[in-house]
Amino acid sequence: MLEISNLSKTYQRGNKEALKNISLKIEEGEFTALLGQNGAGKSTLINILAGNVKKTQGIVKIGQYSIDKNELETKKIIGIVPQDTGYDFVFTVDEALKNQSGYFGIKNNDDYIDELLEALYLKDKRNARLRDLSGGMRRRFLIAKALVHQPKILILDEPTAGVDIEMRHTLYEFLIKLHQSGTTIILTTHYLEEAEILCNRIVIIDDGKIVADEPKEQLMDSFSDEVRIELHFDHELNLADLEFLKGYDPQIEEKTSLKLKVQKKDLSKVFRMITDKKLEFTNIFVEKPKLEEIYLKLISH
Ligand SMILES: Nc1ncnc2c1ncn2[C@@H]1O[C@H](COP(=O)(O)OP(=O)(O)O)[C@@H](O)[C@H]1O
Ligand SMILES: [Mg+2]
Image 1 (cartoon, rainbow, N blue to C red):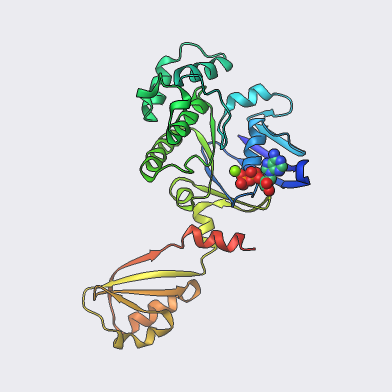
Image 2 (cartoon, rainbow, N blue to C red; image 1 turned 135 degrees about the vertical axis):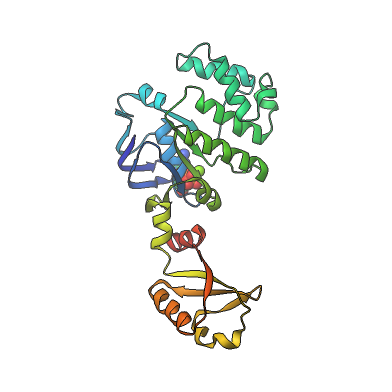
């Protein structure tokens, strides 16, 4: 669906190597988070896909088309929600969306525009001028604009930066539905929670290089040597009886549940120790590591 091979970008100004030999393949139906600190190269990558920044080296294919040879065809396949926006403030929302449709040769798509504006809570802003929209409304407008030609891939550059929590969750719902209806989505974010909630694949970019690229669950698994487990009992516990678990940071909560920190390799041993003491538990929960912990490990300089 999207294939990037050995992509590099050096900006002339500052002779800055923003992307260093990046390769990435996105399959249809994926929902990918591109995570990275400020200056990591996320926007550079997206701007190259959008045709706004010229790559220095490498191959980019969108669908079956190369961005060098079939720019218009590639633009039909992707919709891009940019981070920084230069657009014409004098237009109304409706005019701007019609102009964008016209760019793709699409006419008479009023119903679809209605649908988009409704889903993005902009219906009553259809005739408002862009310059009169609030920051959050403009971000939503940009999503509508990116979707007006019904692209197969939607790429969003920090779509929720500066958007309040309530509206952020509204956008999450919108993106989840869009993904369920078949759109492949890539988004950059520095909200780790966002990547955790929405995405099924995580790509971490640091200083122009990809330092991790895995299905989310796998990434979370491979980085956790230690798990936190919680065991529930049908009787009250007291710490004195749990002396044998002292190496595992035992904590009693609500009198009948026990929390432990255990290295994965010791899990069987710990369960055996507990059952040997004739302590019977009635339920067990395993807490996954947070993406944040993994992220910090990967980008710690
Ligand atoms: N137009 C530009 N000219 C020169 N350097 C740039 C330009 N745009 C970005 N950079 C530099 O390239 C690096 C990557 O920037 P960017 O892709 O915007 O990162 P991100 O979106 O991850 O914050 C940064 O060091 C940034 O300063
Ligand atoms: Mg950026």
